Length: 77
Image: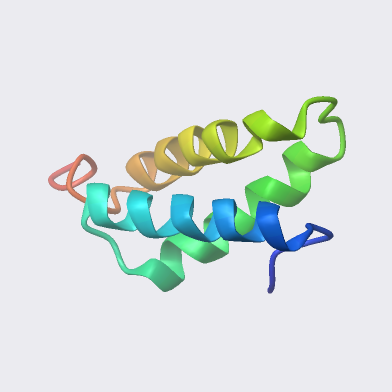
């Protein structure tokens, strides 16, 4: 999957958020990217203020990965 319907500036922000999140939780970028893109599609539908999407999608992605036991915070669950 690729980043859905975003302009080049938004795409750069989302890619930076994906890389930062992968680094923070010690997870493979591909796993974070897949989860992030899924959440972006879901949250983008009702978004009125797009500037907040990277933060919101990152938070949701981190929660999903932690609940799945993926990354530093999810280790040992």
